Length: 363
Image 1 (cartoon, rainbow, N blue to C red):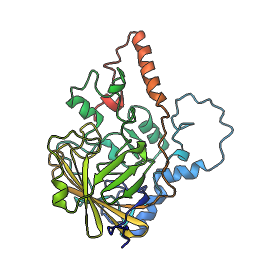
Image 2 (image 1 turned 45 degrees about the horizontal axis):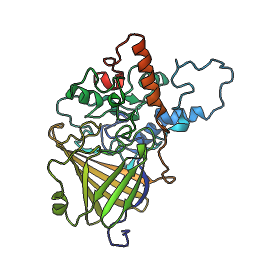
Image 3 (image 1 turned 135 degrees about the vertical axis):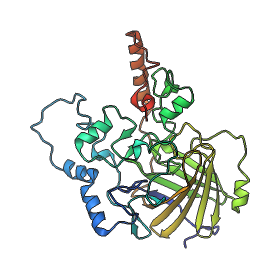
Image 4 (image 1 turned 60 degrees about the horizontal axis):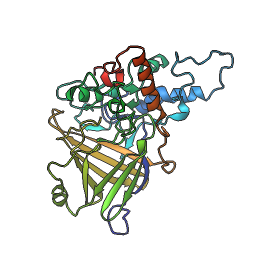
């Protein structure tokens, strides 16, 4: 077991969880562990794998149509140059997995009072399906891989906080735009809780010191910083009742044998992770091999789920170091969104109640 200079398990480095395997059961599989034949079929039939192959071909120079926005895949920012969803089924401790979830046995999140959000659907199977997902009326789910809402999704939060007029999704002001629009939090659930792979930027940089552990998430440079204690009891005693919630929750950490254990509570209800403010997430990080990090998690949240649920992910060394996340470069998109809203107001339209699909539509 690799250890740091102060004698604890060394899990530092740049890692990625990019994979065809998703949080919930996919590929039409009936079991957690997939056969070699199932793996081959899944990888050969994957929509994005086939798109990568297709877009490597020479361009069709006979197509002289101007880009007018009617085809969101033609000339858009989401051609395959920009995405990195992974192209192989995830292999955890030598087993090809059809889902990261290991319990319940069906590989599905055991939601209590509502169906699974649409972000958990499998990737699109056709270009027409991707056009529908990317564009016409479903901005919560960009093509099967990019999730913008979870159990605490934007719509439910807007409704819970008085929703409707001026709620998330309205164009009245920047405060009413989504957390992703405002670059306050990474898109999807890549930062957690639970940390999940999405369409791109599935990269993490872990840094350990004697007193803290830091997990830097590439997407919108989210950072999780947890103080390290000598025991679980000491760590849990550090939680303070009444402390303000944090976007990704309040985390504490300790070591158990070869594992780093992180416990997270007090999640801000406005984020789109898999934990309510009263839920508890336990995460365990350990090296299975020098080039394979196992990320195990357990979600306990009776307010959202019928039972606790567990899972395991594999993380492998990233191909390069993390660079700054500079997608918005000053967030000109926000200026455009609000400027467009002011134009609509001048035209006599009510933008306060005109919530878009991402924020105001039903789930």
